Length: 246
Image (cartoon, rainbow, N blue to C red; front, side, top):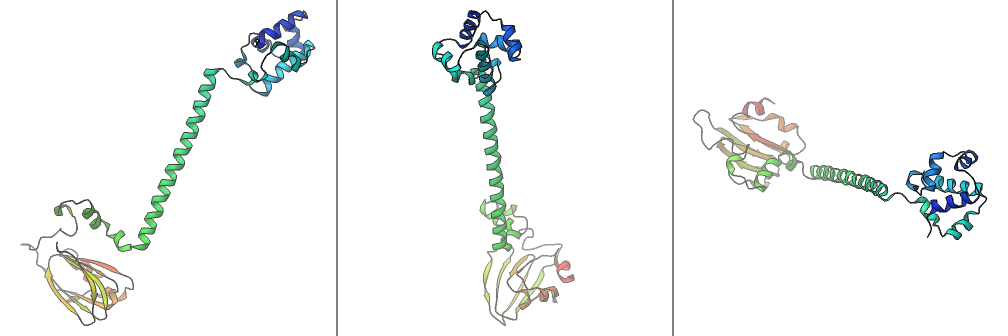
């Protein structure tokens, strides 16, 4: 297979036509024509423009394009080839761009999926979302002394008085109760049941707050009557005044 540039130059010299004449007639840059005859195709414009330069060059020489390639066994496809190292750089940039786009899409999809799961989880179990720290500390099996809320108070105190708690159920109602570090008790309490407790820390989750009367040191928590949704109440010496004042 002959060299394209040398074949063109040979045909031009046979006809005693200068490269400057071709530049004038084709209105092409002389530097581009020299690059063509030196077979430095990577210095020429790419694709269609490179083919057009060769076609115009042959037209000035009075040669048929197909006949020329057949005679010198040149490869027309070589007109669109890049210099290998330049092609590699270009392909590397394209691959990196596509890789980055895929990574961005994957990151966006992951974040969107996590947010969706969080919203669904919150809708299904609001109590777990609001008080998820308890479940977290249990799941990772941290020592009990690191659990911030339920173990904030010991079973006795020298500087604070314990809280007297009484719970009266006006209707059948599901509730979960926990005192200090003890295991929680969850069940449906029957109408008329009453619980009396004394201590420094209690946690109540009540399905229907309006059906329960909770008294702290003889005073009722009045705001429970207005609630229609499940409520969690944390009782300790610090929250005593806040709960009774609501």
